[in-house]
Amino acid sequence: MGSPGPTLAAPPAAPAAPARAPVWGELEYDKLLACVHCGFCLPSCPTYAETGLEPDSPRGRIYLLRSLADGRIALSAAAVRHLDLCLDCRACESACPAGVQYGHLIEAARAEIERRRRSSPLRRLVRRAALAGLLPHPRALRVLAAALRVYQRSGLQALVRRSGLLRLVPPAWAASEALLPPVPPATTGGALPEELPASGARVVRVGFLHGCVQDVIFRPHNLATLRLLQRCGAEVAIPRGQRCCGALHAHAGDPAAARALARANIAAFEQASVETIVVNAAGCGAHLKNYGQLLRDDPAWRARAAAFSRRVADVTEVLARYGLRSSQGALRRRVTYHDPCHLAHGQRVRAEPRALLRAVPGLELVELAESEMCCGSAGIYNLTEPEMAQQLLARKLRRLEATGADTVVTANPGCILQLAAGIRQRGLAMRVVHIVELLDEACAAGEARG
Image (cartoon, rainbow, N blue to C red; front, side):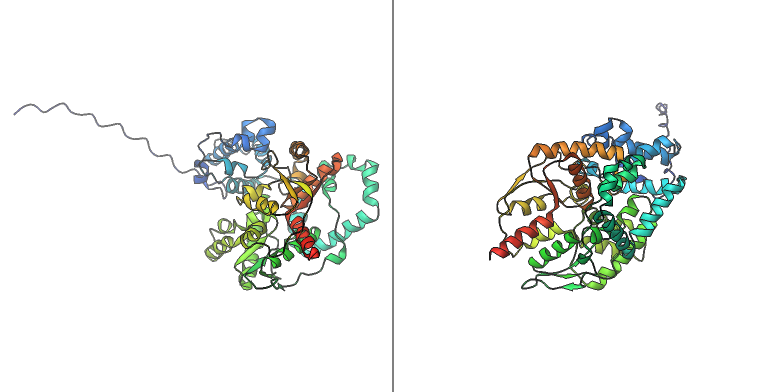
């Protein structure tokens, strides 16, 4: 019997799989691992376009978050600064070939930062006043609107702006004052009806989210939206129990408040028995479509939240789907369309607004270069980061001027405030309107013509 062959050495033991990184607040580590650091997101990121710094890019911020979750770096002021500078515009999600859910990551990170970071007394006061004292309470918002109405119509606003007093206050206060739109007359206020009939035969029953600031400062947008919905054959329910959508709470790192508001809205619209929930503010719509993710860990609400989110639609999606029964009159204007970040990137709604505009007789639509680049509004970003917001606004205004348009059309109140303030400051000969205002005007002109 021959001697045994040579003994084969045992293969080297495979290295032990690294332990799952410790949970860093609500941050889902698996979502961090989806980023392959390819760099496709870099040209789409507004802050990276301005600074050219890797930590100010989406992949750079994801690397920072992994390092924080792994415990390799501390939550330093420098790390927080790069994360704070993010607009949460989600343009990187549109560009990402790997499907990284960046919006979820940055919101979870901000919640953990708020938990760990000791804020200044002034910052805590502002957050408490805005997020807890104003947005969830319609009565408080109406009181604020009344005060602003007096401020504007008494001539005090004009005096303050001429005096140079705004140069002496903190930048965030000056930015807030510059953004103030004309507050509508008190006669446009009051509770909206709970039900509105369709014009003609009913084709769908929808619910309408009237919003918090939207319904007080931009009530004309809501009224125009309701008229358009009726014209496309929608019976509209406007539930009394609806609340602020909670988007700003989620963006600012207060997920508990965002979840409480989400539960209230889900319950209110469930009782209304609607097929679709219509929203005319892009940021609110993107957040409502995210309720399923927001309440994913709540067994009592998980399925209800997912069902709710599937029914949410932007007003332009609904109008494009059902069509306007009213003939539209001609509007002889040269317009350009600015894509709100949370409509284009958060909801992937781009074609519908343009199709609706092209259907208006006499309207010339000129495409805007970098239309999907953030204007710098981003919720309350233009208040918390006024310097970067102004840089992004200046870039946007250069693109708008190049179109030669007399009207800028968009679909989000924050964008309207930001663009209108920039146009006013530079004395440009153009105005900013919500798309529903323009469509309502075209329908009214057609109806008047008979």
